[in-house]
Image (cartoon, rainbow, N blue to C red):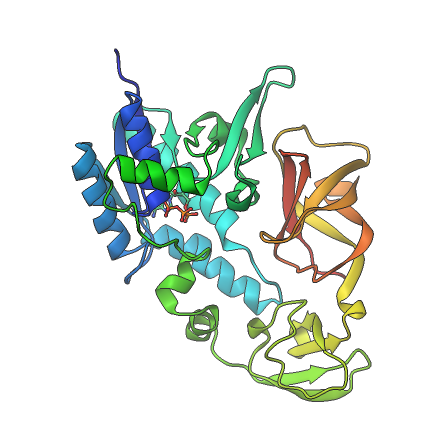
Length: 353
Ligand SMILES: Nc1ncnc2c1ncn2[C@@H]1O[C@H](COP(=O)(O)OP(=O)(O)OP(=O)(O)O)[C@@H](O)[C@H]1O
C-alpha cells in the first residue's frame, strides 16, 4: 500500500491523539505537529507539547513543534484586548482556527513536507459539493460535540486541505478508540473551551493582566447611576451575575458604552433584540447571497440555533432579522447560519448604532 502523507495538528488532548491514531492505522504516513501557543502550563503550552510528543513516540511517527507564540500574541491576545477595550466580547477560537492553526499548519505542511493535507481532532464534517464546486462544512454527527461554529471562517482552500477524522464519531467512541489503541491520553479530562482560561486561571485574570482595571458607572437605560464597575471589559451583553446591584427585578447588561466607560443595564426584555447586523462574513457552503435567505442561526457556541432571515446589505454585510426577539445578542461573537446540518456561512455581530 502506498502511504499518503498527512500532517496532524496535535494539542496533546484525547481528540487529536485519536485522530492521529485513526489515520496512522488507516495507513496514512502521519506527521504530528504541535503549535506552541502560549508560555505556561496547560494544553496549548508545555503539558500539551509533552503529551503530543509521547503520543507520536507511541505511534512511531515524527513530531514537530512550531513556536507560534508571537503569532498567537499578535493575532489572538492583541485582538482580544482591543476587542474587549472597545466594548465587544470577541470570539478568539474561530479567528485562532483560521489565522493561527489551519493557515499556518497547511503552509508548514507544504513548505516542509510537500504535503497539502492536514488533519485535526475537530468534531465537524467536510463534504465536496460538485454542483456548486464548493467544499461544504457540516455539523458533526455528534451534536453535543459539534465544533463547526468555530470553523465558520475557514476558506475553501483550507477546507480542501483538511480532514476531520472524528466528524462521524461521538465522544464515547473516541474514548473507546483511544483505549483500544492504548493511547496515553485516553483518559485525559476534557480541555476547557477556551485555552486562554486554562493558562490564565479566568478570563477576568487574563483581562486584568492586559487591560487593568478602569472604574466607571453602571447606569440604567435613562442614565441613572445604579452602581460602579471595575472596567467594561469585565461585562458581556446579557450578563446578569456579578453586577453588585440590589434591584427588585433581575438586571442584565444591555449594552456597553466605551466612550463614557459605562455599563448600561435593564430588565430582561430590554436585553433582547429583534435584529442585529453582521460584518466580516465568510460564506462557506454557498456563494454570497444577493437576496434574503432563511436559515437557522446560532449566535453563540452553546445556544441552540434560531430561525432568522438574513438580509444582504451593502458592502457584504448582513442584517439578521429573528423570528422571535433574541436575548443576549453579543457584539463581537459570531452569528453562524445553518441549513439543517450544513453551515452556510457566518460573520461577527456588530455593535448597534
Ligand atoms: N496547539 C495546537 N497545535 C496543533 N494543533 C492543535 C493545537 N491545539 C488544537 N489543535 C487542533 O485543533 C483541534 C481542536 O482543538 P480544541 O482546542 O478545540 O481541542 P479539543 O477539541 O479539546 O481537542 P483535543 O482533545 O485534541 O485537545 C485539536 O483536536 C487539534 O487537532
